[in-house]
Image (tube, rainbow, N blue to C red; front, side, top):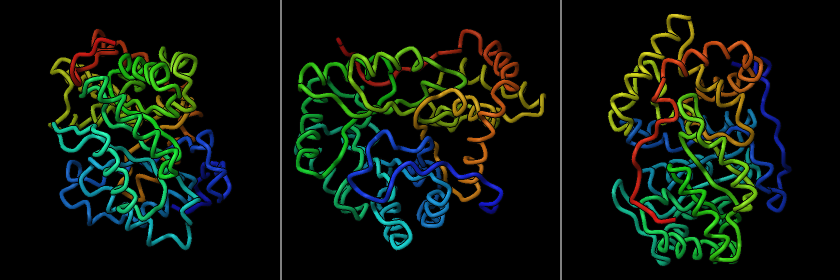
Length: 335
């Protein structure tokens, strides 16, 4: 597909480091966690440089990864280095994460957080990160999270990172922790990433959005995973998905219904999120075709919002009690 057939996202910043404020993040962020064994048998075989170059061509000038995502940082770093003549470092945003080491292993000690950030800089072939998130904060005690964020603030003061944030699933806890950071550490987080909480199956994040800005003094709230980690697919979720059997069954019924109406549930779900969320959205993209589909879907979403509403209403009706259902994630907290 040529650029004449696609309308790129607006590139909202100049190619200067100091001009890359968070308000200029693009509406679509490329989720590079897809460059991982969890999603692909051979992620190193994906044409990462071609994918990133096409994404940047079309205005997706930001990517999201993590030290936890297997080889993702190394793959992304090599790809970015290979296209640096066309896309200098200051023409895009790098967002990555620290603190999660393995599936059930977390190390939020300040020394480990610092090592992780410095290692990410090496892997990504850069001397600064635009955004660093503390990864999946609900899995550790609140005090450990606060100590880790304090270390990230030090790394920000030293110039290694430009903006500090956190990521997690339970929206009430990540909101309360963001407020606690402001109260305890005396400065606000810049950004928070919430996943699977603003999608066609779960819109809980919507009611928290004004509170994040008013109470935690955030600059940006990012919505990730409009397909809810692959839950909203006609082929069903991946085996690792933590949704309940009842929720998976309800989504399967909804997918069968949308298919009977000539609409793939994934397409409808992406249009739902993109047409209703005000702010950046992270979407995993692992091919040029997926990049182009994301761009065309972005524009189609806004045009199709009114037309899609009856179908969305029926999906929500089919979901029934499973609409806004979540799943256990992390440990109990007393905030």
